Amino acid sequence: MDFSIPQATTELLERIRGFLRDRVLPRETAILARGFADSEDDLQKLRAEVKEAGLWGPQLPRELGGLGLSLLDHGLVSEVLGYSPLGHYVFGCQAPDAGNVEILEKYGTPAQKEAYLHPLAAGEIRSCFSMTEPEVAGSNPTLLACAARRDGDDYVIDGRKWFTSSADGAAFAVVMAITDPDAERHRRATMILVPTDNPGFRLVRNIPIFGHAGGGYDSHAEIVYEGCRVPVSNRLGPEGAGFVIAQERLGPGRIHHCMRWLGICRRAFDMLCDRANRRELAPGERLADKQIVQAWVAECRAKIEAARLLTLSTAWTIDHRGFSAAREEVSLIKFYVAEVLGEVLDRAIQAHGALGITDDTVLSFFYTRERGARIYDGPDEVHKMVVAKRILKGYARRAEEAGR
Ligand SMILES: Cc1cc2nc3c(=O)[nH]c(=O)nc-3n(C[C@H](O)[C@H](O)[C@H](O)COP(=O)(O)OP(=O)(O)OC[C@H]3O[C@@H](n4cnc5c(N)ncnc54)[C@H](O)[C@@H]3O)c2cc1C
Image: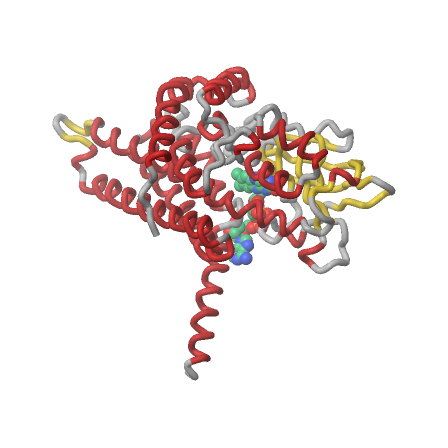
């Protein structure tokens, strides 16, 4: 395994880092204070500059106007962009759109690509992914209740979804609905594209998270689909392929998330160290002089590096040997990096004292928005269970083979 970064990637990372430092970070405080919804003009101007600089869509294939990076290279970019909550959005590689682009590219019909994929990849519209429901355990999507009934050449969708991230202002939703309740558990659901101006699509509310309902891109909506009628031609992929497509969507997305979280870790770590060096507890005595803070610094550094290497090695394995060869590692990084993220953010907040929980630094934004990291795309416990079962099964098999 070779972790040396090619010269071209190093140069690209440097350019992206420079853009973030010079153009994005100076605007960050003002944009976050106003919120994404009220900052759309500023964000679009920054996006135009990114395009002008030839840096748009690092993960997008070249045919879609992006840089066509490998998973590993995009992971490195994602880490750089994660340093600011605006990074991914400004560069056109934000969730949930990035995942929706991937599945539209793979499963979309020519008409769907024209109507949804191309404007989405260009950043002209936004999208959302509507799977989780309030009434059933999201960690077990075979329990989904939202149904799409066939009526002539249409589907009619009825159900309630929540935590449909970024639905506010999105042009369309990718909805996972049950089309055949009698099929085998993993063949029951289908992905359907629903324009949000459909009369059967009702955004009930942006759900408040730790006191903030957010708005626009930075929001999570509760949605009711009520007699929501869309043509069968809006189906994405074959009927019954909902689970397969959802899984495919999550795979590379986990690398992107983990590297983004590591970018957040770097920002929090920088802030922790700066604060420790600057804050005087008494004349001539700084926070950095306290052993307990030194331990935080050393432990955070070790954990960030360990999480980073594990994530890069997972991305490398997927790039070289395919997703199935990295199944175990993908689960490992999903819970491990999310835990490291929580710990590093918490240490940085603690070092800032009361300031750390105000909105006067970016830490509180990260803390409230990223606590969900341990829940979405599979809660920690599910990933730990999956990994442990695989490991234990391997031990049992080897013991049996050895006649023990
Ligand atoms: C910030 C954020 C953004 C999200 N964005 C989207 C989105 O865009 N679209 C979308 O469809 N959904 C989205 N979700 C929803 C997310 O996918 C679900 O929250 C997740 O699947 C967990 O489902 P649940 O909330 O119903 O929790 P449950 O399934 O009810 O689980 C609750 C808790 O039980 C524990 N648990 C669950 N299963 C097991 C197990 N097998 N063994 C041991 N313990 C277990 C875990 O601790 C888990 O947190 C988002 C969630 C968050 C927090």
